Length: 356
Image 1 (cartoon, rainbow, N blue to C red):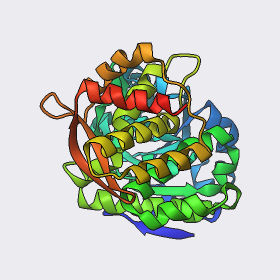
Image 2: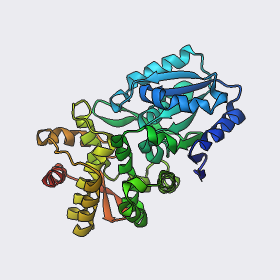
Image 3: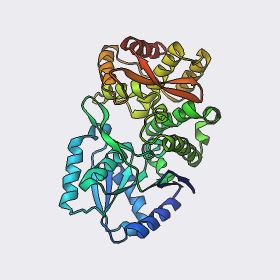
Image 4: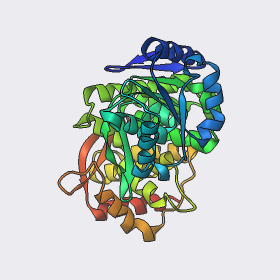
């Protein structure tokens, strides 16, 4: 087991021994307080039984279940949870435990941080995406109809407990979705990490090592810029276009998972980095080739590009009406604060389609 020390909380990474640490943490801080566990139907079936086997100090916890999926990360679901907490007479000394993926962590943390002006919460991420990204850094929020995470706040958990054994409960598509964020960490901050990922057979990946390395990369960025005023914006590489693509496909039959949309965004924003920045064409070709090894590239519906551009116009990262995105300067180094026109963004999406 390893521990990463964030600014004011710890991130425990390992296998089943992580739950002993969590059990001791609950005993030491919340033994006589009310406890709530938030799950969705997937974590209730696949993760909750394993979770509870090792956590006698949570036997009296209240369990709240919400439907899974990004389409349910809404204010309406938050309202249901706030009302449930009120009916349970939850006070400000309680602790709220998020057992699940990115949606559970984002929304559960938001609900906890706003109920009665804030109760403590703990993240127990169960997907690769949430273990390497969403559970770390204190970004909380929910979606509105016109965009992702438009309502939210920054608030750190009291602790994060990452059991990589949960990854065995995921199907291959979910693992690859989370792996997109792992690749992104190498692309923006660590050439050697990127090269190691490239040279390792997918069946030989050491998930404990990968999670710890990605947490370390993201944690260092967040420590320097906790509220995304500068450097932390680099973590958004691939997300300006990726979020718009994800939002467009959210309610369609051929919906895309977050990481799948980010892959499209990284290719398109890599193209912008080459055409309007410093990224060499050889680096762009390398990036595209690596991503094609792991991911099937779906064709983007060109009739929906204007709507995707409208989603980008509403992106929370924008400044003074201009659409902002992150450029790669080279593999392992990124820069934020770049502006793109609608024409350039459309050009980037069409470049992505040209690869298929």
